Length: 488
Image: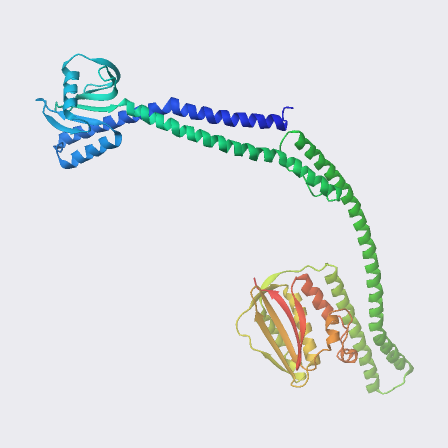
């Protein structure tokens, strides 16, 4: 029962109310009157110092000093007089100066007529509390001599301090009432806070009934409800872990099955595509080799032609096998991507210069008008593979005006490199399949220039490895292939 809600609520209520009442009583009765008296003493000392300074600099009877003294006395409810050796009034402020002069002379030359309680005494002045019998009043007084021998007295009625304390007590009473109201509100808030764990546990149990084990009790308390909440947390965690392990095992099993099916499909598709691609060149090689063996053509020119065909088809087969190996490495992540910063404009310009003979043989006009450096991030060798593939396709399919245009589009964080060639647009139904392995739009044309249908799938694998975009766009007068590289 040490941490029960009932005991906590009772303790908090008693502690807050008791603390509020004790604080008000302590402040009012222990400090306020002493503080007022101490403040009066400081004001009297300050007036004594001001009068001494005024006498020293000869401004005791000036209008400016008189106004300053009147303001000080008015603010702090004190009276001040200064008289010379002839009992002539030099300066005064506050109550009736004649009465104060008589009282000061009585204090100096006559015996005490009342009860006096000395607060402070120095060579020049005495500060005391005086209880005057004839009028029943009490005063706090400070009297003595100034540096020039003049007599002075400052005086304030103690009853005014008592009245201030009474006003303050009433004020503290109002504060106490307000504090009680605030404490009531605090108790209501605290009660609500204490009962919140019960509401929280209700919500958690509802979610657990729906097999939602993400809900947790977050309280740090030590009472009964918190203990129950922590036990529910442990229960939810164990159930969640058990279900998670079952789902993980099931998911891994599904992945293994899916992966096995995918590998089987890829193997079948790969064997089918490779068999199809190799069937024609192997048939040609066999046919021409048998012709050479049987001596169908005895002249040297025919034999050279047969050998050229065999070598050409063997070269195409070798190229396709190399591309398939490259594609396999890219798709399975065995090829490391080395990111570096280089000038793509200079890269393309150098390639076009080296391909100038090939461009002239195809009777093609190439437009590349980028003059400013354009730095990008990427694997330079792989980027070359992508660009060469695009440019080679453009040379093989360029028609009509026989123009190839290469341009850049500088965006916020990337640069898009475009390769456009004039000619026939690609059929719309073929666009989604262009980057698939062994896909060919025009199989006869592809075979004519020695294509294998693997190049664009290598482009896809390279761009995926660098996490950059690529694609193709049809125009009325041609086709544009593009890819993007990071510029930052």
